[in-house]
Length: 240
Image 1 (cartoon, helix red, strand yellow):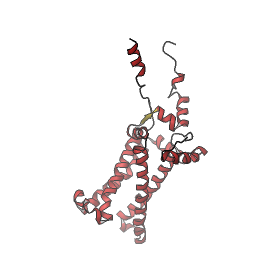
Image 2 (cartoon, rainbow, N blue to C red):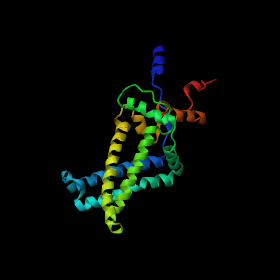
Image 3 (cartoon, rainbow, N blue to C red):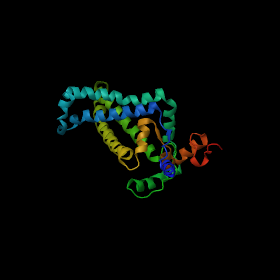
Image 4 (cartoon, rainbow, N blue to C red):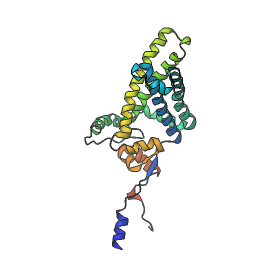
């Protein structure tokens, strides 16, 4: 009987989750990621002969260009999806990007330590930490560069020749910056130790409560005040 009780007590507590992102965000994020990589793959053989072997895979040069344009259209849709189905979430995201506090500036010093595996004490963060804000801002800038320059390249007859030529340069710069940001984003979201809870957030929309407490303490405190999260030390025992 005692062994059975010890076994029950030793069982791991079930993981508790809290909603972080809406379904609209999850879908928009997935469409954005798929479109970006599809654009990258279909563009590779157009930039260098080294990737000419992709042309047969893509159905030839003409079909590669056709696919590139299809994915260029889908690349624009995430913003539309987010705005149509979760306008409140979209504008909350925009507001967060322009809201900076001292805690956000302090974040980067500790982030560098954590990134290289050293012990760090990150300051309390809100719904988005400072790193996520910077990531979002850079992705917005690169998307504007890619989409804006892509329009001039797709419809050169409607723009001055100099602007079209400049568009090719901006397109390359935009994609170069975007690739660098995406590589870092993937590492921190999937490969970095302890990143799996964050990755779950953009896949299923919810995250581990303990992960929230450790990485977004200000947001955690807000959820406690709202009654969304009830800390274990404040829960009433059964029968009380």
